Length: 121
Image 1 (cartoon, rainbow, N blue to C red):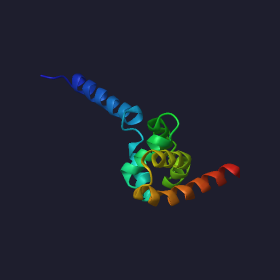
Image 2 (image 1 turned 45 degrees about the horizontal axis):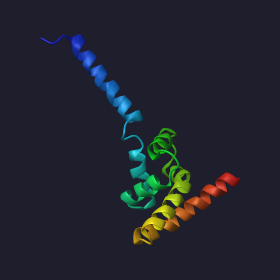
Image 3 (image 1 turned 120 degrees about the horizontal axis):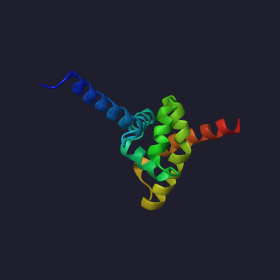
């Protein structure tokens, strides 16, 4: 028969594993990425590509940091604006004009203007 101490030990290890996975695992930051994409009306796959191609360093680290800072979706969107703009430039340079990208550009431009305004104030 399994003792109570063994059950508690296994449950503790599972809880620790879940905690660490949410904090630093591969999925960290993904929920925020999905929510920001929906908030902006940009398809999730395009948003992911924009972030991946526009971030200096690790996109996962940036998203996890933004998620931990508990910014609103709009604030997180503004913080991502420079990366989204770089990503749009790189994607367009590589693949040429794309309809989805053309629809996202005005949104990115508005966020970038807000980002620059906040930084200059």
